[in-house]
Length: 484
Ligand code: NAD
Ligand code: UDX
Image (cartoon, rainbow, N blue to C red; front, side, top):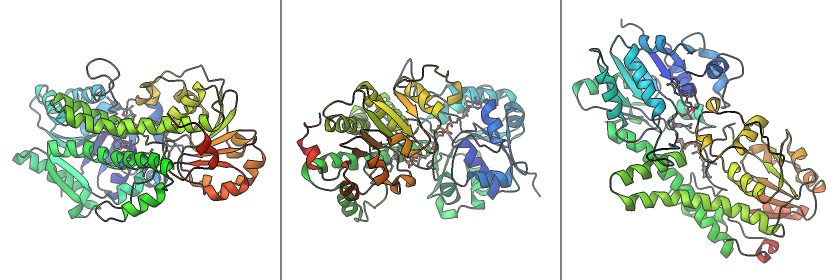
């Protein structure tokens, strides 16, 4: 029989960690080593306190770690030994130089590729797991072949479609697995190897799509752009609902019943967040511009503009309902993560909302079941693009905001507050004792629900003034000055 296949994954982050854990679980005959330059991250993967919170992840890691799943900082050794190398490093938006604010920063990718070229002594399949600009495989191929010492490299694009908070579920039962490769005999062989030796162990054959390299790379950017576009579409409609008395949940339900549109991913919100959507659309926009397609670039740019509009619209609602000032008022923030079931705060709309409220001199008190105080203080003291970069590479800011407090309980956060904002759809926010919260707040007491998790009618019965995205407005809000 064949020798044991060895996989090495460079980058032990939100994608590399869970993805490799599931490959190790489903392919017991493969040895999987996840490597990273960050020692704290690797130490955490080897401890009982994993570096990321993801439902079901602990169980998978517990079962495989030490058996055929390993986490190590010995990057070069494991790269040298591997047959298949996944590269899952971060690809944030460039902050300076050419394409700053839009283009993908491929510094981490390039240094990984050069390191692979340096240490390899046998043929390798190099798999792009990170989301990269279309045509990146060509650049990677050049770096590898120009430094190759006679070694054969096949580059594959195998973008990851998991969503945070449901990563394990998504990996167990993916809608599809996409593998792109060169259309040469060696390229096809590499595609087959990744398909048969890895994914076919648990993913049904008809869900494994193979394409050329550029289609695979571009499909990932396109999928994220389409998904984000749905949210901006429903959010744009939510503003019109508020102006007309229509209810966005009813509209989304009616629209989504059309099987051509479908019911998923149509929840109006305070805006989409997360490390992917904005970054990948900006990247797509940049690529369009570079290819002389300004009309296409502007089309996709609008998805981000509506998202920014939605966030500032929310802040304006809060401030205008409270007599046009929140200066010195305590505002509770329930939820800081960019979605439920994750502790990830990258690009969370909560950052922009908090900045908006702090700009109007509010006192804010934040509660999130999975985000640490340290993380929140860091997020709120950073400039616009800093939070695109991996946590451990950031200098920790000592200047904790005096206007911000972080507490470990929703009741504590809302005590004495004038208003509360729900910014993440954590399940526990649905079942809070809102009567108790009301009793301990200043009056009039306001609820601003940025995720449509509470029943506005029930809260109004208690006595709250309620704003829910895209829902018919209270008389109180109607009387307030129009939102700019
Ligand atoms: P992350 O920041 O959590 O993890 C990246 C890791 O790579 C970090 O731990 C970093 O230390 C490590 N790294 C960077 N350069 C390295 C090097 N030269 N050698 C070894 N390790 C190195 O990022 P992530 O969220 O896991 O995203 C990784 C990629 O996957 C990105 O391209 C992202 O767009 C894409 N992606 C992310 C998601 C998601 O939900 N987060 C989903 C699909 C795709
Ligand atoms: C996304 C893609 O879904 C995933 O396929 C890709 O691999 C990575 O990017 P992620 O960002 O982890 O995943 O989470 P997702 O569930 O897509 O949510 C992104 C943001 O959109 C969150 O802030 C979420 O709250 C928001 N959202 C999502 C809405 O506002 N309304 C919705 O209907 C759905």
